[in-house]
Image (tube, rainbow, N blue to C red):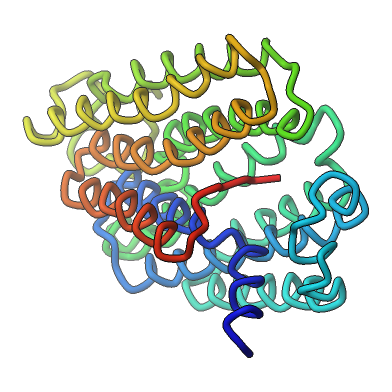
Length: 330
């Protein structure tokens, strides 16, 4: 496979956006109160495969629309055959489910509906009012995938049911990440035509609300119950954040998230032209990483948070090296 062919596949799979994926599982593990381990790596591998399956399937499903509106893309330009893209989507989905199965049955129980959501979005829901909600559900499930693999005997004290408790503990973080994804996806629906003012305005408001929420003091569970209930459920008590470092880090990352997303949203609201709308989508995608990192810090995992935050400059470096600065989810 020559350099041109590799570049076409890199474009099809949106490789710069791939750096926004590992943070889902890492934020989920942090929300469940566990350190990342081998099974977290398997969950990350599953997430990456399912995300890339969605990218390949997206372009296969939109090949006729892209021939009219985006003829430069790999499939309409003839650089990648439609059958090859569809085959890649199927193979990557299978690989993602296999990796999830390797992480345990709880992980597979989350990965299966995640894969179904990805395929349903690309094949049926993308151009319907349910499209943004489906995309948001996929991101939320991806975070829960990282939480589900922490529900082992050491998390649950050997009593069983740890995966379910860990997943419930991560639900608030999944909702916050899903809300961000919902806003970005709503803006992306007018990427080629522009003209939408309400979507970037709503995304701007959502960004402000999320930035405020991720910098709030998180509810601390009593000892031995951190994986048993999500913040705000009966049995939880307000307490200080896990550490001053995590508190400061969550505030800084929340600000970075807002700064990354808010400015392009504001510009798109003032002038909803296709170029500014596309920049708003790109800014929203890039803001996913500091949001994931802020969620990890909010959960009291500063080391995991810094690891996630490091993915942002790595993604920018890769995009420059690959000459693929534009990122899109459509």
